Length: 135
Image (cartoon, rainbow, N blue to C red):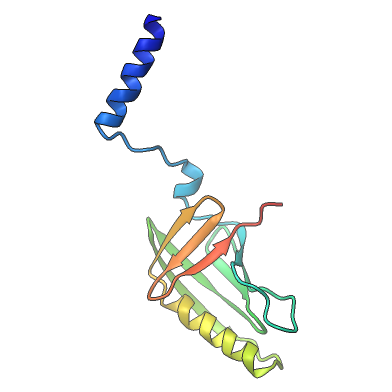
């Protein structure tokens, strides 16, 4: 009985003194050396969803709605800077080209990031939501 009382006292003391919940180390680090899938539905007439391969050194390869761009991520704590290079010039319908331009614009305005389990949020004036594949 005293073991149970001691456990209850520890739990009550922790909640009374505001001991924060521990965040797993895997959720506090940016998921380098991973693929990130944009949390979006495919555009009409396509099955393609933008995805970003992030190398261990921060190099990225972003396959968008139509085109591809390579670049670099610089991450320091919860801040992030996204630098992109030239975009490929594939023939694509106007709505996909607009989707690419919009995605690039939002991505280059990102200033911080946060991870919530298998979701990586890239935060700026607009937030991009990417998922880590779970298979």
